[in-house]
Image (cartoon, rainbow, N blue to C red; front, side):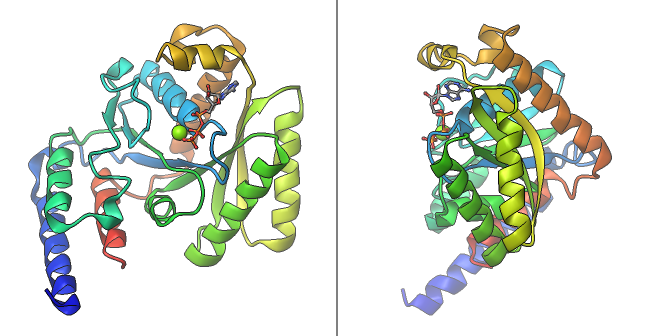
Length: 274
Ligand SMILES: Nc1ncnc2c1ncn2[C@@H]1O[C@H](COP(=O)(O)OP(=O)(O)OP(=O)(O)O)[C@@H](O)[C@H]1O
Ligand SMILES: [Mg+2]
């Protein structure tokens, strides 16, 4: 197949996928309810994205919200407590930009089997600035940047926001500071980042909250459970619960931009290089 043919073929496939999304009654179910799509991302790896996604998801579930996690690299939640649904890695999301037509269709079939009435969709991205990361961050309504107080993590968070703002016109970010060891550390990190970004970048950063460092986190990963389920009363769990509550409160203030269908469509059109 020539390159031009291949492009035409791809465009045709994506169009039919888009049409199927529009026509699909299951995905239309609950379309009056707009899902909030949040990507959880970081410059540096290992700063706690998956911990944030899984704990926020369970906290939101406990608040009665319907939650979908996309491509969490956690095996632990496949059956999902609190009715959480997970679209795991391997179903094609992370590598979506590189899928051929038949795999894109298979991926869509996976989507069709999901109910459409989610309140919140959390995307657990890879770390860094790969094509897939920028792509998911663009498709999401809100970007949650996770960092730790470690200087390299802060620098990498800054670099990620710089790239997303300069190349992809993302101007609003939300900051979560994880593995905080003392009182004001999270706010200190926030202040540092806003000071530099106010000076050099045209972006706004909202502070979503800090999560304390806690060794029990390793234990929860080992036992394949999330902290808010295992130790609901401890400080980390309380911090996650508060963070989740902040997110929900925020939904009331800011009208969400669109439905879940809108998100899938946007994802597909971005995947087509549009
Ligand atoms: N608040 C915390 N206190 C102590 N340990 C933590 C905390 N948050 C995360 N961890 C630990 O740090 C490690 C990395 O966390 P996690 O896997 O969530 O990071 P990640 O950003 O998803 O990593 P990756 O970039 O590899 O996907 C895990 O072992 C986790 O248990
Ligand atoms: Mg992870």
